[in-house]
Image 1 (cartoon, one colour):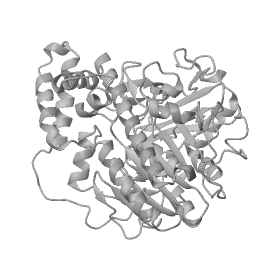
Image 2 (image 1 turned 90 degrees about the horizontal axis):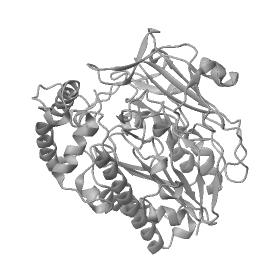
Image 3 (image 1 turned 180 degrees about the vertical axis):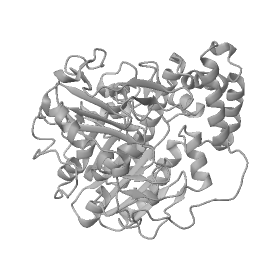
Length: 504
């Protein structure tokens, strides 16, 4: 029997660091993970490489940031990015080291045509269907190459996604001059959500975990160690009332749940929506407990590395915003939970700054395989035996046709520069009719995050260490400079993305 450990990577969309019991949250959102944390490495300062899924997963899977990643030339927004062809990925790295590699994921951004399946022997995106290429090799998509079978040029009427986009536009427009109770589009939007119950845009975690455990069971039969990845979407708006109620922290009728969702869409602070978010965290925690129980039943748990993290967080009205706008680079989006349970059962909290772009180093070290060749490197020999280096620099960025937002940070300072091509303004909330803008300043903004962890006291960028601003200078780029993928979404995929709030 092969003694190399199995590796399971479980990622959660829109998961905030501060909503977890094992990170000090007062509500009982994560009892299963709280117990697991006692025998795990828990990272107190882990940061996503980007503020949206397609900006973060190239970092998680392949050590790429937006500044050195690929963009879909058909949709040159930060929400539509991929892994550059030929990149080493966690899956290809573990496959090279003798692992069977499998994935069951959700989120319509995580497409084979954007190379998110690179290195996997089996890849199933249950939100959009199975792999759409042969074999999942890293070269499955070439630069600026159109894929067959992914275009839909036929005419069609408005889809559910089109209706959502229009209702959202009108809701927000009316919200500028009327209270929510008098907004004429509030009830039509609630009716839309009721209709959407027939075909919700994301499957529940329970069904995803069921499919993933079956996939793992089949892979275990190979007799080789297994690397498996699953991604859950339950925290991504729209939140389904069934998952809220199953979580058990709050009980809500569907009408009330959808009323709170209207508040969220209008960026009106909503205690009800925030309570629903917490309850869904508890629901997901229960599904993680079910996965662990299954691995124990299979007799493989004692030889399994489990990595649990978020691709990014979620704004919950913190500064008058909900969601995860691409250029909103506050830490409610960038600061994510990261828990790594290793077979040796050692529990330890680690406080040094850590980038999810370095996840390849961490997982390789814990699994006992050599490190691979990835673009993002920490310079550390170990992430679990050495104390975190306060001077280590973590980078996060968002890049699209509107501009390039760059965050560089160490243990004490965070430096944030918003680089707009016009040097005038940049969208923070990507609402094209009612954009929220910032004045462009070449100096940037600084936060003393060792004492101002909630970033309430911005400072002039010039007071930050010069190394941080100089690195931002070096990394600044434009969409035109990035390698291009040329991918047309089929109508179903595009409609699901629209229903999830993405402007296509």
